[in-house]
Image 1 (tube, rainbow, N blue to C red):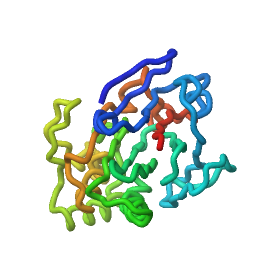
Image 2: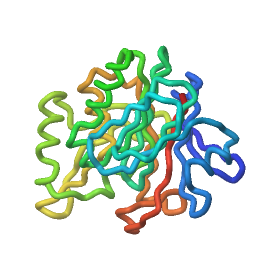
Image 3: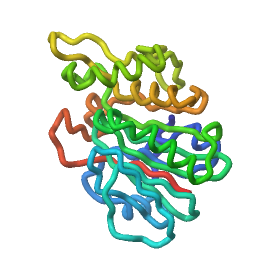
Length: 252
């Protein structure tokens, strides 16, 4: 992924989405002018803006009209209509942007540990296929999120998820050489200094869930910048208990 600055707005873009001409952005933190309308205006873009009241669940909202409507509740937006932009906000969780290179259907989802456990990624794939996409034509961009070495969780909170992932994929690590990182392997979990906790990597879990759905590494682009570690770039709830978030968006 590459970093860009336009009109003092700093954001990251996926090479994979750019290759197929999808307008999108993973924004860095801003304390002012940090709403979708202001960010869109700052980038000189125009669309019908859609965003959600996010609840760490598996609710998926399909946008079937071209009119701006009141804010809905959920953690994923999908549309097959032109002229729309889908927006999600995060501060440690994964922002994932999905696009169909043939139909131009798009989706934007927010997932932390709760969303992963509720299978929001698999359910989003099912929903986007229902509106006419073929999973072989889908591409996925995962934006900055908290990395595993900074995310300590109770074993009891992830043991079912680890079992589900390992049972289906027989993988405990993501074997993938990412273009923007020196990491050759991303481990799903590692031991921590406490007996009842693990260091858990939500991006690795998301990629393993994609693998379990038949998605190939060539369909996935990943930004491994850590929201917890990069204090100047990103808001982090686990680091600061902040109410501030950074936005991510994709345009149809």
